[in-house]
Length: 212
Ligand SMILES: [Mg+2]
Image 1 (cartoon, rainbow, N blue to C red):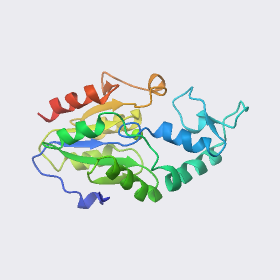
Image 2: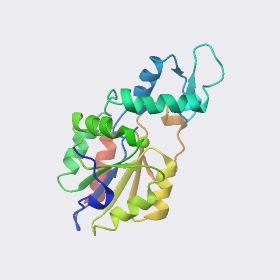
Image 3: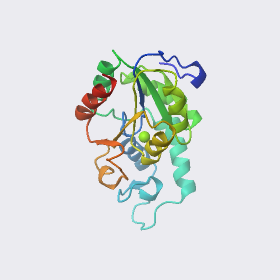
């Protein structure tokens, strides 16, 4: 599996299109990052929908500062991001859906994450073109969806990306899944605007209904 530049992305002009996030959609990011942080003396106490604000030195009551968190995050994508568990059912569901739809992986991760990200995706059966992205995803989704007359759907865990997609490309169906069961009850959602799923066992059929 190779990363591709947006302009080189091959989108079939009449085929359905699925645009899929990685962390907390295909990969258990929080749990993997938690294991990595623990090896560096930082523990996760998940009591809000956040990352660094849930991370503490043992025995301390204030979370680590942003700089410490950012350093751990950057190092994780250098040394630890191969160690992520795949989300149950995601690979099988996408394999089936990809018989009819184009699948594009759209992931926000640091540039130095390119190798670990593509390696992880290949290893776990997600052999689809990947765009390494930064920032809100709506405009990029709009650009991709404009290249096919077929139906399109976008799957992400983060409400800001789903809202961005709604604003930039309202015709693209939106689905939210938050794989980490500890984060799920804390996550901002707007289920009447972005269909909310807990498992790929229901998300897969819902996507199949969109792509027809
Ligand atoms: Mg994500």
